[in-house]
Length: 328
Ligand code: SAM
View 1 (cartoon, rainbow, N blue to C red):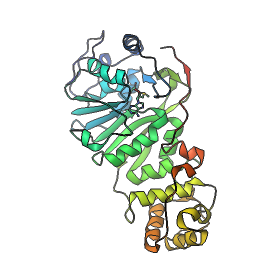
View 2: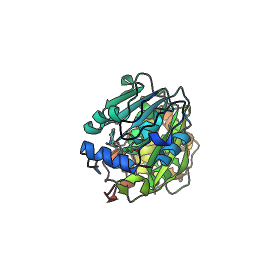
View 3: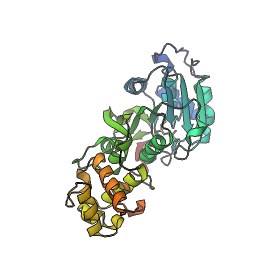
View 4: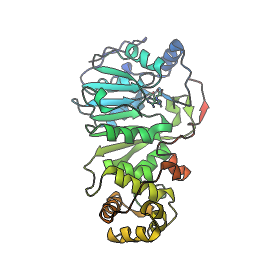
């Protein structure tokens, strides 16, 4: 198990318990950041947790088993990593900031921690040994959705996860059909997993303090609905939400090669051509993709055809998380 963090605290962990003394509070975060000369950047979504209670809450909500292998994206100064190393048999921490990646083993001295100085959007499954089973992370908010979707695609061994994201994004990831915020992230995550809200987190537990609330999203992988492959289904989803206020007959016209063809595919799938994408379950999107395969219709829209609020959630460049206070 891990040694204590290499700070002023004593503290020893083990036995699956996360002890109060072993986690980083505001003083330790301030000390570490000063020692490393870290000035948090908005570009990398650097809002560090300095509240041990929140760390304990995240670790508990993740439902980790002792034999799990946790994958943490963006360990930052190590706040959550310190909680994770005592809860699982191995932790992989993927950090894009070279200064933070290099400092992590000093803060979290554990033989079962592997630090990957890398971009989580580009990592491939073959670099992780042992293979990760759970994604647990306080994600950089501007790339949260593409990171989750990329890792679920890349790592079939992930059985689930618990991620902290901007509250608005948490709402979208867990929304169901008929909700105003149901969209591309909701359907794509639903293709991989059952997702549920796991609580709200106030801005005060971060340094710097963001001016948005955060939300926890828990998810459990499931077998994707049968009938069509992921790329085919996601192409329908992208097309349907690119013009979400239009009927599917109109929204899928470009994808199908004309509104009549779109209608034909929709009818074959048992979906009303007058319905809108926001009303469909992931299973119904699969049915459309499957019907398109049979008819030979259906193509692919580029993500840039999507409306701005959909682009925000699907991996294209987005604004930075606003920060209102940079005082630790
Ligand atoms: N886990 C830490 C905590 O809770 O205090 C830090 C979380 S902070 C919200 C996000 C972290 O993700 C930062 O350390 C940032 O450098 C890192 N990061 C940003 N983009 C990344 C990417 N594409 N791949 C890996 N890490 C990234």
